[in-house]
Image 1: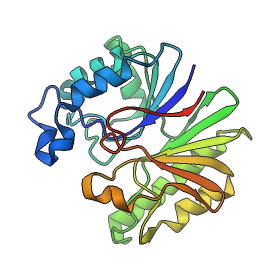
Image 2: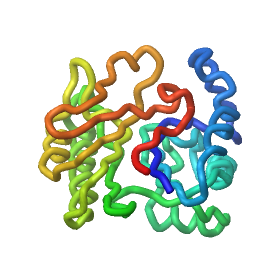
Image 3: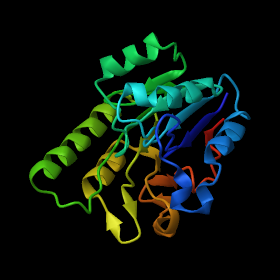
Length: 228
């Protein structure tokens, strides 16, 4: 039994969205994901940190989730900025159930328990966006959702997962960083950064939290082991 994390699978089995247009590093990425996940075991848990499917609705994303469901272990899914298929928790759970997707669940306004740890998270927000009007409302909701997830930990040690990075070179999101520190999060994994922006990633301990970038192309499409 082990805990893994990877983000930004960007699957599009039912849509015309080849990822190799974003560079040779994405060549054959679906097959590489298949090969990597084949090394996991049925007792393992993988957190998928957003941007999982290019499908714009359940119908377009179904084949992507059938592929993910075929991988060993349980998968917990966060919302990313390109997850247009995302819906209410009740509708997503019904979609999984109706299609026999038995290894999938969502990490959203809740937490999941792994051993002694609480797995918490939300999408987050790109703090470089102007924090006014609609953006301000979305950002404030994300901070509230993160805190709701952290509170649900119930005093357990916490591992947090975000789609957007809460920090990278030249950038900080103070409100989210404050929540991670306030709730004594031990480690935070995040995605979203690709290609040339990998060099702006911050990994290692900042304050009291250890940070890890887990974008699929950054990891070579191999899920990162977080805990045994």
